[in-house]
Length: 215
Image 1: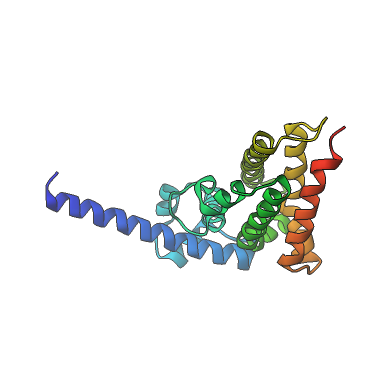
Image 2: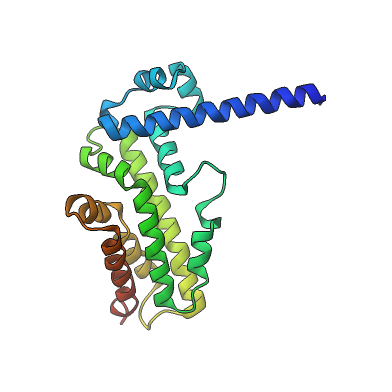
């Protein structure tokens, strides 16, 4: 490839990245202001100064735009680095005991909820109703969260072992239930808890499962 063609290709890629970021910024604002059901692809396209087809070509439908907004918020940026490979999770794995591992994991959960909580609060308050694509989004993020939970629990089991009678699957169920965004939404948005209070509640609940679920 010639230098000119490589330069043109790089310019197109950068333009596409900036367009994608602009669409996501607009989508985040509109989802928060008008809700998922009140947001339309046409309105997103007008606000982002692109055609509706550009949005369809870049993401797909409205639920795919929502998922892309969620993923960027969850990661904290749009870099192609999996959450599992980020420093926050490395810190969880570096702890010297099972309780401290779960305290560190509660800290990560608090961080992530702080990023995505407002968006999920809007979606959860509206509910999926008959919108199968939104229901699929909620099922997808639940499934992804469980995969992340399972990775931490397996690390705990391999490094520290589990109490007699306690299985990996039981502890995954416990962690998956406590870290559900519904809980954070209830406590922080609806009950007015601080994120510090939420993190403490979550950490103590996660640690309690190490001893109360076995036997």
